[in-house]
Length: 341
Ligand code: GCU
Image (tube, rainbow, N blue to C red):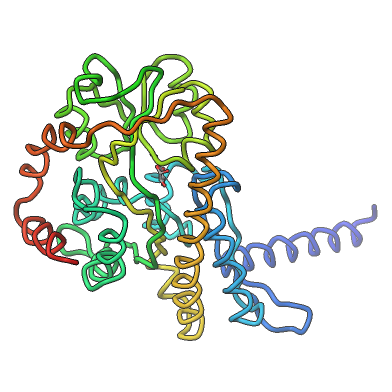
């Protein structure tokens, strides 16, 4: 290569690097017609067979249609971008655009969300959705933008997804709180869930969702708690053959966007995202119902025994937890939630 050619190659290389840096920075490119295309990254921690993925995939489709292809969502499932706590931190830093999280780990960022972890807060599924789709649910999504000391949290709530009720599973049947005594039960990164399992008599052990299969298999924990679609899609049934519907909490999933990303969008882009998020919530609820039915079939086929223990002893053993957290702002909120029909 003579000197001129090597200067030329160096120049081209610099140009390519500069252009890709500019694209990476702006997260935008142009389509065949020359119109600019903005891409947003979305993270969640479930496999692609889970109803949460169906909801997010639907949102991606709707955003693409509503924007005529000018706004695109790139979905990263399976916890590829980190645990829920890590992806929330990435939203705050503005290095990730959108993430789905259970309200339980989100409550470590904005504590009002603790309310959703309270055991037996909701009477049933209808009560849960009347609250989420009503003034209270909307209000909590709006509150997410502000942290506990009144500063911007870096997060913004988009919508809720169904995550059903949470229930215990282990290698032994959990028929009453006394069956939890001496068992290490995996919980989310959530102080309320820790207190709840302790109040029932078990030993709460936080483990990230993506590490739970191995923790169950190796006996780091003896059991866990979750909904049927998550129990099945995570293959936890391979280790735990006893699933008890004690319905101890209804902890919603939430879809959040980084404030930095939100502020960088124009009004049209914000409107497309808002509409697609709302539509995806409806879609995900339907996918959820189908996902639960499928999961129950699969559990049967895989030899899982499903129990329906009496709920009252579980409820009674957790009275102290509801009392502990129903103070300050949460006291009024718990009361208002109870009043929703
Ligand atoms: C549910 C929830 C997830 C969460 C998981 C967990 O499946 O939908 O967002 O990660 O519980 O227990 O960690």
